[in-house]
Image (cartoon, rainbow, N blue to C red):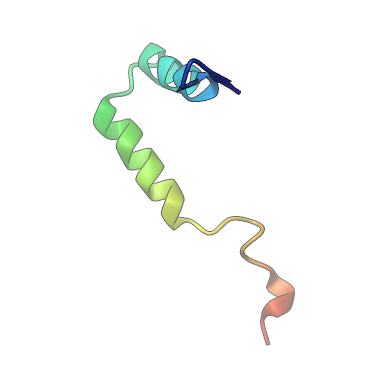
Length: 49
């Protein structure tokens, strides 16, 4: 959902992080670390031989 070039959902998430008192560095760390973790879709135990 976009409004005037801004991602409203992203703004909502950042606002919530600020409300919780998270620092910019903590938000960056979370985003960077979540990219490194495999998702449920990318890991399927049936593919293991």
